[in-house]
Length: 180
Image (cartoon, rainbow, N blue to C red; front, top):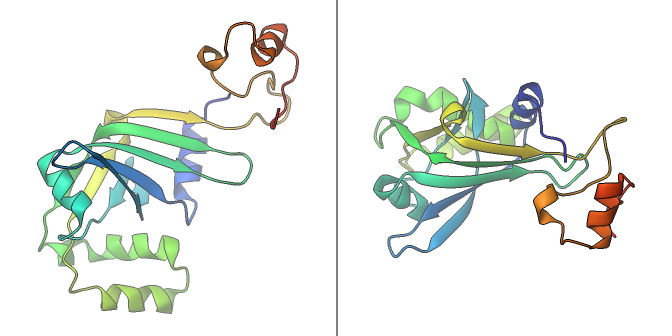
């Protein structure tokens, strides 16, 4: 599968409505995955856990995270991230980054009046502002081939079982279609 270029990654992460599925580790070691609103700015993914959320408590205890951002429609673009989240502003400093919060809300509630209403209705839900600096994370991307790009494989080569139809098609350069 082709990897996304830096420009493709920036464009994809800037499109409205994509959710980040953020994985943290609970106190007992169990994984926790939550869908999270975010905004992509200055090489970072910015997100705002509420003070009483389980994933906020997990981040405070262990800031290592995994994340996945994808889309259901073709080009089936996907990004996975492994890294360490950083707190940019602690709980109680909400007023200092309120405009960034509005920017996050506007990615998901596109009508300005409705977005502002949501911000005003949630002002008393204390939050902190966190970021994932993409340059410090392991970032993996892939998407469907476009144009005349090689269409002989739908997965990374290591996933094909030796001797399988898909492995043979990939080795022979034969097209492999989705849904086989």
